Image (spheres, rainbow, N blue to C red):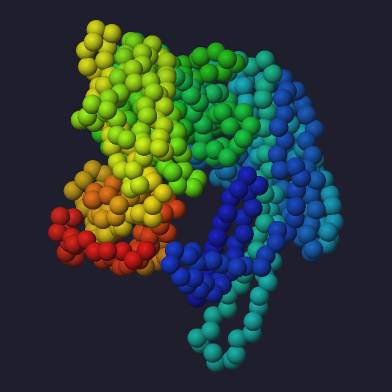
Length: 548
């Protein structure tokens, strides 16, 4: 029998070695769950000390410890630290521990059931130029064997399995150094900067390494602008992934250990449209920029599908949102919607809104104003209103033509906004679909689901795909991002992935959410992937009705 070990490191760094247990299949996309009945052998408070002190100062440090429901023997020792790429700090038991944190209490502690004691240490703040230091104390329960079952004489098949439960805490002492300016931050290496897709949106990612022998604390500001543009950059902070859930301003403090390489990320606050851009990164300590570099960044059409579904690039650095407008007489619907035009270009523009191939807007639709002027860096709104007295008793659709001109009256952008005018009818979308297929010819490759709307109402498509392999591992993807599928329209939902899945049989589930007009659509089936497996091509699939 193979012993499975689960090792969970948290900020408290509790490690549990859990023995074998029966795991049962819980149905589609349900993780296999282990249910060990274990508790930590002891509790420690606090888990970390956060201090501010001058160089060379000596500070007493204490941690209170209590055994839980049984006697235990603990080992306590100072430990060196290492850092993961997401910023998480872990113990490094293979390297010698620094002598700045000295253990004063015994290295081995024996506790009776529910007994309390105190770990005592002394910290000497290093006299180096570093503006930040972090020290670790590793406390480990020596564990115990909790299962010993006798084996009958002559039994050659049964194997004894011992389960050893081990509780381990990494206690931290973090020190900000008074008067340290953090000038060594200028020696950090900004290795690379890129834009990646994050759930359909653009996210900035930077890799930074520390070639110095000192830990550092700093902040990083980033800004994206068109290559060669004179427009100012809207800057934003990059953070370590392990601090995404931190709500205080500490989430913006970046800490890097000597020799570490970390990544910093954040979603862009503004849209990133196709073209050549420049990303500027600034490393800051004590409110002073210590290092600044500019990196070229290229954006291709379709790189960020969720962004494309939410807004329209009207012209270079001019955006319009929302990208589609629904006006409705139905309960809970909006009879008035504001459309915002944002001019991030360095020049003024003029915007005109016209009806689509007609002298007047369709019955039931009022637009005001129809002409706007936007100064560089400004934004304005125009209002779409549903006039119930002129509205038809059936759903109708139209488009608004929006023309963007420069101050010299040159057309620099021309696009359309779809508008839905919904009456008080029972008309709903009717969806047909084909089987899910794999398309490895696109960049990135994708699972593709062709769908068609044969109903009399649009469907804002929010689709998710879950793929489960033979081992129960789950990969989730999204598509649609709320983009409308109009009546009579057909599209291909592309669930994009970074790489082709390994050969094998997969169970998949597609869920398509729209609005409240129809219940969610769910499709579940098997898909065989492999070099010798012939999958139907996207163009050869047949659409069939879905029973919703």
